[in-house]
Length: 342
Image 1 (tube, one colour):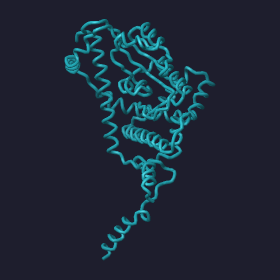
Image 2 (cartoon, one colour):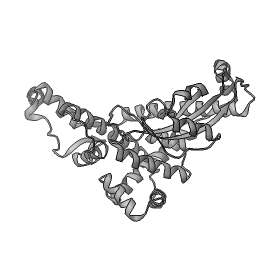
Image 3 (cartoon, one colour):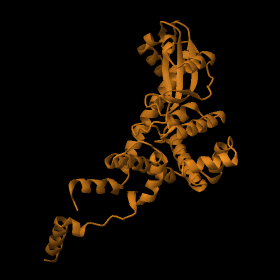
Image 4 (cartoon, helix red, strand yellow):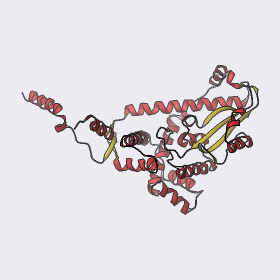
C-alpha cells in the first residue's frame, strides 16, 4: 500500500507539473554539468557582440541573437570543463604572457580605450584569455596533435584534383582575414566574434594586425576572427584565383596583390566590403603543376590539415555535447512563453 501510494503521488506530481516541477534559478540562463551560466554573463557577452549595432532589432530577433550567444557560451563551457578534467588549464604565467603580447602594440591609454569600447574590464579580459588559452591547449592535445597527413594522402588528393593544378592562366593562391562593420548574426568563426559598426571593425582589424606582427599564426587568427564565412573555416584560404579575376577588384586590393611576394602578409586594406589583411600563399604561372613540386605538396598538406582540423573540431564538439548535461533555461522559458505554458 505504501508503495502504491508513493507511485500515485509520483503520477499526480507528473500530471500537475507546474506544482511539482523544480523551479529554475532566476539568475541562471543555462547550466553545464550543474555549473551555471548566469544572465549577467550572457548580457555581458551579448553587449560585446551586439550592443553597438545601429540596426533596428525586433524582440524576436534579439531573442535569436541571445540564444546564439548562449549556445556559443555553452560550447565554450563544455570545452573548458574538458580542459580542466585533462589538466590543461592555462597557467597565470600563460595568461600574463599572452596579455602582454596583446597589449604591447598599444599605449596604456589606447589599451584602456580598447577595453572601454568592448565594455570589459582588465580582469574580465584576462579571465576570457584564460578560457581561450585553456581551450586552445585542449584542441592542441585532442585534435591537432592527432592529425597526420601521409604521402599517400597527398598523392591521392593530387590525382583526384589534378586538373585544378593545371593553370590556364597565372594564378594567385590567396588567404584573407575580413572584418566588416555590418551587423550580421549569421557570420560564423570559432570565437563567434562579429564587429557591429565601422569603429569596432577598425579596432578589431588593428588588433588582428598587431597579433600577426607578433608572429601569431595567420590561419588560426582567420579561423577565430575572420568574418568571411566561406574562407574562415579554412584558415582564410581562398584557393587559387586567376589573375584576370583581379581586374574587377578594388584598385588598392589589386595593387597590393601584385606587390606582395609569396609568404608575405599585407597591411590592412580598406575596401567597400570592409577591412582586409591578405596573405599570398603562392603565385603560379600558367601550366601543369606536378606532384613533385614542393609548393604543390605544401598546398595539398595545408588544405588536408585544415579540412581534417575543421572536421575533427566539429566532431569533438558534437561528442562533447552528447556527454555533457546541459540545461538551457533561456530556451525553455522562451518556448513556454511562445506556447502559452506556465
